[in-house]
Image (cartoon, rainbow over all chains, first blue to last red; front, side):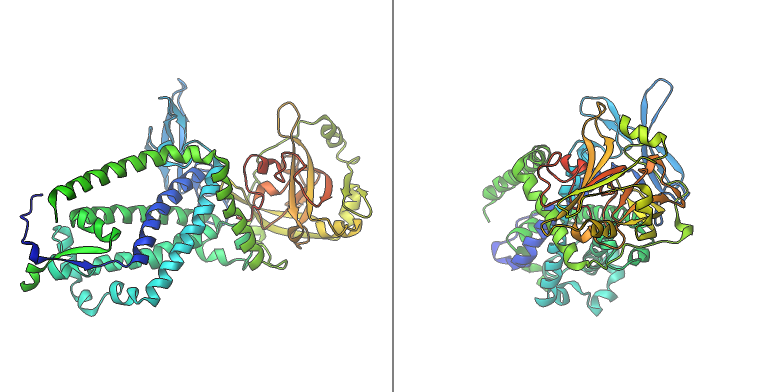
Length: 280
Length: 258
């Protein structure tokens, strides 16, 4: 530890995360990677994304991951986004088959569940854990509203919104809150969490459901709100990567803002605060 | 806080995390092959089936589209030409000798020619075909309502599933004929038809001539092509691999509304 150990009397533990929040947080930690990785295995069965109602409107795909074979029979991986082609051999389009040989495969084996190409099993994983994920999100939203966690801890206050510029600058400079101000989430944190809970999660769930032919029939045409079934497949994919992006930033912030303190608070609920900063 | 204790705890946690992730990746493959875990996963399918049966009525219709939405060429997947001499023989004769046999748990087993099928109450619908792989294509189908056909043969009260036996063998040696099954909710749905036309012309062989089932609220593999025989059963565990369909026997869901 590089920081000087402050006298014991100046440290106190603040009960930051309630048990339901901790349980639902860790469930999300387990469920999101499973859904991501089984989802990528499903994607591998048809590695093109389109906009519109069908895949055969005549328009080229927005995204395409495929392999290309040259005259010598060697294959390379190609990623084509909006008409721009990139060589992504070894990662996207063509990757190691586990025995050092490149094979045609959109997302690599180490990113998919199961590791091998196995659409039916990937669907079983995805469609089972999607239930768990959906129920978990509903429970979280219900709990947050009724326990007032949402109103107390997640809605930005007026003061928060005034400080948004400063908070942004602090983030860029990696200056993190200390002392009693570290009790509450900062405004960017609140907005990020609200965005995940009320925008990204509902979008990923709705666009997943929209691909179900049964759920399409609940109200014929409802999926046209999102541009049609193939658009929903595209949105589901994009929102997935937005969630991966959020997770990356979240993990980074957890690490730079005191990894062990944050981790403990999400396990036991207790967050350590140095009270000497009360006098700042 | 005791520093030494904390460090050991950290070391343990780090090692635990690394161990867990390595085990998880290897485990996902292993566990997918275990009977217990696949049974657990299958409860997801049951939940989806129950939930959709709860929220969808027999009147909930799949979306229908306009002529402008029709895909320029309707993709054919799976069998393009059944490797079956009996089928080839009737196909060469433009299906004039084709008969659809309907039997099993029915009061009046019947055999229908294509002309008979065309005189049954029909329906034309422009719908989207969603493949389990992820792609969708839109086509205009015309066919006989399955409900009309089932009413003609008078079902016995214990008939629970409609099984479709097809002409296309799924193995190169000519074995494993394609088959599918649906429940009565889907069988009597107004959009469930035995299609004999696609986009205004007789159904091409690549798309399942002479008859192809359309079950519009489920995925493409449920919509059996080259239907030769319909059997009413109370249980499909003795047919094929026992899971209710060729792809179901390979591990796909029997209920493909999701």
